[in-house]
Length: 302
Image 1 (cartoon, helix red, strand yellow):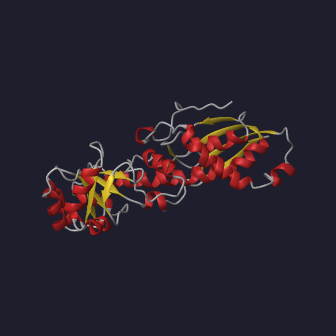
Image 2: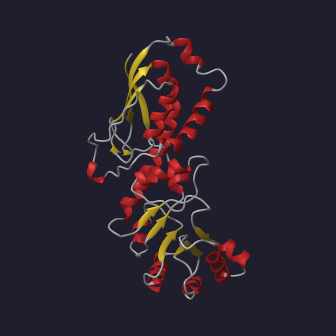
Image 3: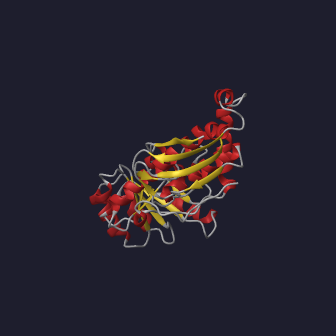
């Protein structure tokens, strides 16, 4: 039996970004494969040789440092796949802000299953909580401006849905999920098409009316070319531009397109980028290079 508590008070609740869990169907394959990788061909020979088959324990997963939690449901599923009778209570759901000592999950059940799933659960939770925490740091740095922090396709293979979910837990928003849900015309597409206009016109003629088209530009001259195309792009990605260039670009667009700034995005640079008036600020490192948030499993009884 598994329970989940989403109504438990969370630390700094006013600034938390609590979000709905992903459907279990979307994450089960990832968690199952991680468990199979760890269990190998003979299972957990350390735990099985030391712990009695019928031993029961109570444990918690707690924060070792401050940050934003994500990956709770993946961790819960790791324990449940090894023993569906483990009682898992989520005290700090995804999007909760935590400080050292805060309990995130309570676990009660077979000791063997808890210990065998521990590393997979923590690997996922620590990584995804790191993504959420890094995202939250950029979101905070962008205040009080309108710019939203968004992720990219620079994700860990196999973990994209989980990492993008963690970005939302950190208060950010998602860019496209894959190559199939939006058009993003980059410099190599322009080169292959023979020019910006040709690339945009071919894309518009090919995709459906609900599909958005975004074009990457490196210079204000390229932006002028994009703006000259009637019924062309819906959004423009302003790549590696200085804050002054971004201000000029926003003034040129005049609200006709969604403006996205990308490149050299850090906590230190975000305030100046956000102040230019862009709509979105995208950063790849929040998913592919986020340091983990330190969480650990603590023994209570058993």
